[in-house]
Amino acid sequence: MDHRRRAGRAARPRRAGRHAGRGGPAVIRVVLADDQQIVRAGVARILGPGDGFEVVAECRDGSEVVAAVRASSPDLVVMDVRMPGVGGLEATRLVRAEPDPPPVLVLTTFSDDDVLWGALEAGAGGFVLKDTTATDLIAAARAVAAGAAWFDPAVTPRVLSAYRGSVAPAQRDVRRLEALSDRELEVLRQMARGATNREIAASLVVSEGTVKSHVGAIFTKLDVRDRAAAIVLAYDRGVVTPGG
Image (cartoon, rainbow, N blue to C red; front, side):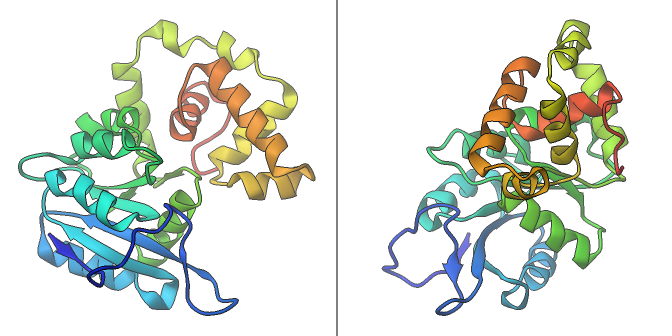
């Protein structure tokens, strides 16, 4: 594991970010996990200082990720799915079980259908394909680091397929969605478009605290624990259209 931080640096509060300079934008600190060095190098080059990122640790195996998160207090973990030893699904579960865990953006390929829903159940905030454009990877990383969910449009149908094959019909009951108020449905639709709580608050001209209350109510009524699971359920029931 390659920790890219100076020795003796104290851990920073998670997701607080580091400022590029006085009054400058916050830098998103990233732990990058992939068993292929060439992939890590490519992702690290894209998520570089010029675009507001700093890769603070690189991991070759899922077993190294939790230690890297504890040592460097990142704002985001970019996680490969298939790694030797501890894979990305279990590593995501371990990271999300940490106190004040960073969000996880999963790197995937078209061969990973069988673990897509498992990764979401483990707490992943979204998926991006390894052959995506640099622009989309940057957008996905920024969105997930800010607390939003991100689904690569090419992956979304496979996420839905995995969800429908893994979740009991009772858990997909449309009556759960019918319990949402009109305002909660609008919040859910904006969540599905990748909006953060701050962006939703600005759109609806309400406080961010009000949006957080709506999001909490959505999670309770849908019996889900995070944005990604709520969005997949909304996709499944046709409340929102993937990519719409």
